[in-house]
Length: 305
Image (cartoon, rainbow, N blue to C red; front, side, top):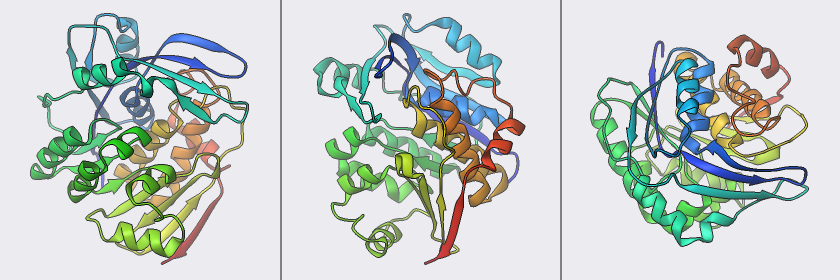
């Protein structure tokens, strides 16, 4: 632990977001954007490795660079940026309509980053993207002695679970949702014992399982300790990027402190700020001290397993 240098490698997108109260188009997003912005709040070095088309707003890249994010690994590519469409119910349950569209998958294939960074980093964070590409990045990073942290999505867990399970052989921390876990291993969430046994059989050292409004569970397989991280209650305006924001906040704190509990509450506090605004505006420019204060409102339980 100490002055770790974090590299986030993944997708940018332009999002159409429809909530019960509001609809916006062309909202700058993508898991890599939310994760890197959240990671930058803690301080230290955060780099973004992604591809970017000419229609993605240049002022957004300028803004996140102003937040301290190194954008020198952003690769310009031809074409139009991938578009996503998320619609939320009154209970903020999400339907991602774009997943059913051929053009979304074609753009995902086309814009998945495959280049390597020119600078040195110590931690690689892989938000949701093609598992086969995550695997190549994870192998590359582990051979360089980096820590590898992996997230996925329901789409990729269902579409290529075999490759995703192989990624875990090269992964230190896995950060799925409970739904994604059940797609990878049907029935593994039926009991805590089944879940722990399944995850412990992989090569990961820890799992962070996100459960939406129920918070997150952290399993540290080295100390055999688990933590249930609650939530900070707030008014939800847009839930897009909440899980990615949690990941970025949690990992940025944990890499520097090694404290699962405080890192979990810090990530939860950042996620609560994310959902209070549209896009990444609720997180950009926040102070670490402000987030740490809000983290005190997040309940935590701890137990051994």
